[in-house]
Amino acid sequence: MSELAQTQIEALRAPRHQWRPLYWEPVSGSGERLMVGVVHAYDERPGAVRTIREDVLDSLYGQQATGARTLLDTALRIFAETARASPLDALNAPILGVHPGELRTTAARNLGELLHTAVLLYSSVANLDELDEEREEGAPQQEEVNKRFATEVREIVVRQRPDLAPGFSRGGVLVPGGQMVRFGYFSARGVAHFTVLSPVRQWASMRDARARLFELQRAQHVSKVERAILIGAVPRDDDPVLGEKQRKALRTNRAEIETEAAAVNATWFAVNSADEGAERLIQAVG
Image 1 (spheres, rainbow, N blue to C red):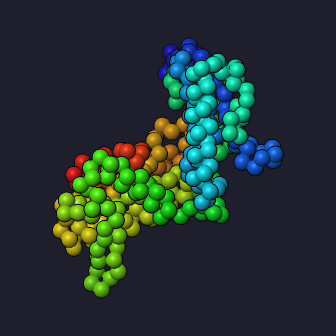
Image 2 (cartoon, rainbow, N blue to C red):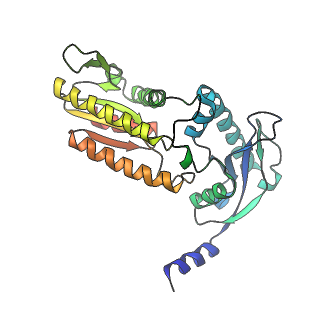
Image 3 (cartoon, helix red, strand yellow):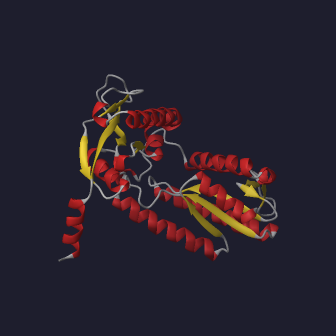
């Protein structure tokens, strides 16, 4: 039996799980809805997952994305709590403007497979390959995204290691007569920058990462610090809402950054969350 046939048989034998797509109507009464998440009863452990990524919200709503993100996450949390208390077929009412779609049952061997199926069936904003251009008015610039990630990392580190607080947002002059360059973290143990490798407009993310590697290289040369570190937030490789083109480009770009970092004696850490970024920084300079 071929490997493909065996895989298809295993998929058919997989347990079946109930779920509903969750839609949001950004402009009330417009009738235009976006799929933003899934409420599910996978493996008898009900929950809700946001499938519209943060970079999509940033692209669509610009500076208003923070409020939209908070609203959606709150709605999904309530949906998850409701799903734990009652069956999914009873979830018919909207919550904070988020509407449950039709009840579906899908065979899936894991939660990721279930979410991937949901995205393929319903999400019009899951595959963002064609949005890899800077054409979204009001979308935040790379620096804004980096700043948000760096702030989250700093708050976590300071909470866990208050003694490292003085190292954040320090800077120095990299060339004679040059301007002050501010780094995410700077101490005798190491200098660090933070960046975000977004699936949208990856060229901008790569340009930013390369510029930061240059600054790290100069800082290490001038100050003689022990380590130069670039910590980058990247999507999980198994993120069910990544398009195949995006997934391939992300893998290529991550490998490219790692190679370029090694060439200038810097360390590249690819992380999936601010918590992981904080952990890496503490390990490197703590």
